[in-house]
Image (cartoon, rainbow, N blue to C red; front, side, top):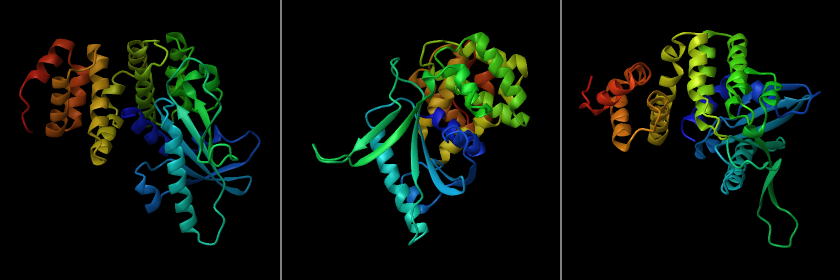
Length: 305
């Protein structure tokens, strides 16, 4: 999922309690103990996906999987990760019971017709009783803005551009809610950045990106230009060797300014400049230069700093 995946994992690390409480039935006392982190789960290379919880005093594990769409391979991915996760939990506490695990797939886009509430991956022989995994499906893009607001956290407000009833007027209220609900200016910057990343997905064709950028800038002038999360996302993607993710993230910024995706040559120039001069200079150019100046800048030879 490129920049969306990195952005959501970044926010989830900061607000694990808000993430978990959306999937725990009301009326149950929930305590977040931390993320599952072990050498076994690291083999799968997608960490920060399983939360240790204590619900009504009993240990539980919540596995969260963000996905762009509910593709045919998603059930396989859930089954594979649960195998790694179960092994990790069993090895770290030999002789003890592995806590019950619940899996939730959070879907960001897809078909208009309602997705099912649950999915499964069966490994049983045809005609035999079910064997495999079941998982919950949370199609956030099929929720309304009101339903996402009802989850009671600014974390879930970043998904509102995906909502089927998203409008410029409704998102104006969301931007105000984030402004009021974020604890610090840095957190507001992170939340607004995630809001824009979600808007770029645009599963319903609302085309609200330009208006949303203007709303954020009107609320806090210059915030997007000085937000540190963009540079952090690029650095994290570089460290993980995700060239495609870097290209996607910078391509979104280019599209926000120019109104189209970069050509292959422009994308190559953006990446080369990020490596040569660092993400800060590239971010400034993508956000500050007008369309013609930006295209000219990308066409110039790259000079090492």
